[in-house]
View 1 (spheres, rainbow, N blue to C red):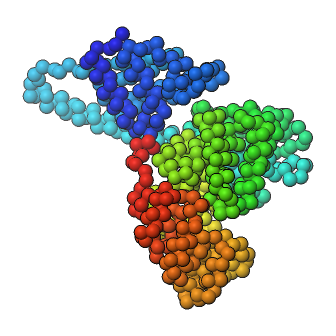
View 2 (view 1 turned 45 degrees about the vertical axis):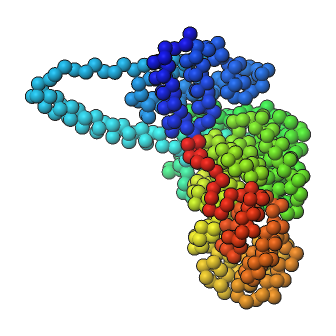
View 3 (view 1 turned 120 degrees about the horizontal axis):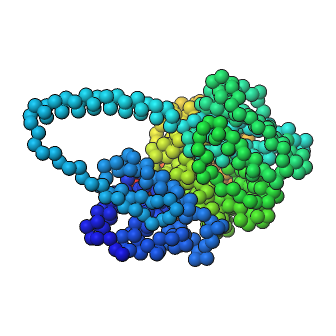
Length: 614
């Protein structure tokens, strides 16, 4: 039966108080779960608070949902109980009503906290003595709290760990991809364990093929523990040796050897995660979903990951094409393997921004892959990341931001998501300072990543921070971006020398390479107009716009930008933040172009305030 009106109102106020807290405001699905069960309870509709209804109404499952195959409701209920306990231990410790979700069910319990009885009149002297006693007790309690806080902080501080590339001992030729892919999967498995901060794959792979020095690796990666090991694959047999080492004293905390069938590779990954968790006294938590895919599909998936990771910038046209082919082959072997769909969508999103590809062909395939990844595994961070990229390609900025934030919430240590959030949404929308903050988070998780260093070198000039851009370009050993930064620093002669060397070294020969734009712009600004004009011939519209802006030719620069819209809103948005395009940025025709591709007006964000979501 419905709850009495006064209690009902108090409970509803408490519900809104909880949902507005930091613990719940950033988690849309958990907030929806709590609201559903509390409101149904207050309305006396307890018969609707059951697993089959929750699966459909809260979590969007189909009416024929089978809880034996999909435990989403039970999993999220456990997380909700934990979140409520944490809330009432911190923000809600003084709340007049406490909402509980008892184990074994989903019907909430509301406890009304009684107000303390007020004492009668107390003599002045007794009040004075009581104040003294209370002050003394308060001092002791504060001291104890300070010590306790220090102990808890020490205990709760996340543990940093790096996984060095597993050494490939396999006799089979061209099998490095398997060892590398397995290393990446172990990193991804560990990255979502509470209490661990895992250094990303790109930084760890800076040590591939080098003599191992655990202390040096730990210092460079800022890691307290190192996982190292080897892989030997022979036919259908797999041998993996791993060892967890404490960096400060080279002490081996745990080691294990796995001699199993190749089909047991997922069980081996689980065993490695559990061994590390037990050694470091952590809680395993939910972990990543265990995929029961075929060995053929998994092998093709690992080859696809290896393909897109080739080279310093990871994504490029050839790598992406190879990755797409391999991910599609993996999906053909196992149409239910969500990670392959997620990476396929991300690759399609990148490829849709290339002038060499028809967006009308790429975009529907990108959307389909992203949607399928989400359908198969809504708790996969890679799926939400791919969806964020997909929405950005369609200029659905609010949906894109929510997807990126959800991906970060699911896996805060995944550097790729922070980088994609910066590259595909924040930077194109002119939110450059926020983009740089996300790149800092990506850099913290992946401190040696050349890809992230290159992104910094791209984005920093849009914030007018040319000295920092030059430093990152030097770290990344990228001549084109260093030459660009040197010109923006006012070091024109040095810039020309660097850019000419990069161009003559081959990177600028390709018509679409941006070195042509940087060199052409610098030539134009230094009076070498004929050479600038020659570089503009046959290159893509973005490069032409930059060169023509350097020549002061506003009309041709605008016309080039008009032809660039096929590359999509995120690429147009990035380009319009470049200092080289100041000539045309505020032209009324640019306002119309921005509107046509789905970009907000310059200086205005397309996103409403989503701070609460995060």
